[in-house]
Length: 281
Image (cartoon, rainbow, N blue to C red; front, side):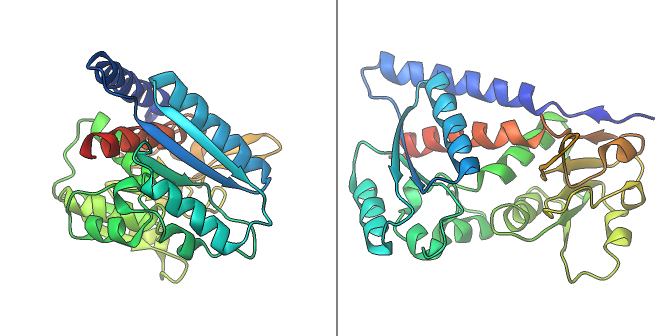
């Protein structure tokens, strides 16, 4: 048996085409385009690349993006003032603070300056709380993308056993809640979990967001399981994920590749969150 490959590029492409048509409709009605403000602090090469990708993706669907590039030496107060200014700007629908911040800056204090209605990354305490109680909000892009990939398989999650490896507020924690809200029975494994391999082998759906290169091998996976690999690591031979793809593709029923799986979905859901924020405002 060889697992079917879950094509994140194809699913993301469909979402972006739908968003492009929605934005064209706004403009045809005489309305302005949605606007995303991106705040990039410092010169981190990876962050600069990510911001560039987001700007191109916005342009492709018609979203106006405005980048605010500020030096790493910016004070906490000046960063907060910039975010508050964007929060009060009626022409801005979404605010994205590119993380991580340089040393010396407090991430939580900065995120607290972003109103929940413009928090397109879904990282503010209010949006995290709204997700916990299953109410309308803006939620973290990568977990939303994972859920869209599962939706593309047209398989009900009701009653399924789901295991999430990782408990970060960016991925592990929110996706465990999203899976639970769809009727799955969810277990979260983390660095203190005893015998995580045994727990993972019970999963019908396995989401791996541990941040550890090729942590999960074939002995962790039940035959026929759906495996969503959130990890991405650069190696001499190319990009790899948190799961050993070559081992698991002969055991899983469906699996996301790295690259081309979850990655394209993250940006697609960022765009979707921006359009959602625009419509709600």
